[in-house]
Image (cartoon, rainbow, N blue to C red):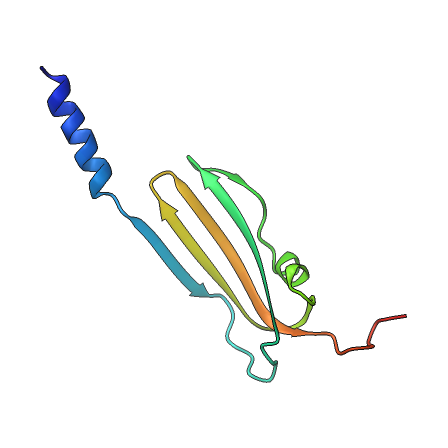
Length: 102
């Protein structure tokens, strides 16, 4: 008979928990750089064990075409129960056509 109240309390606690989705601007926006491309890199955690690394350089390389000048960098954190994701987003402009190509 004790298992029913424990099960009800456990289910209530699970149903009352929510999720959190936060976004932060890490750098001030450089308005002299055009927002032509957007690159993103994420890390994921389960029970606080994570996978991946977040670097601005990786996010710049993930953009199509790759970003050369940064307009802004922001971080988005999503948390739900035991799962989390941390995504770093870089917005900026790529190299002009013909520059660096040989």
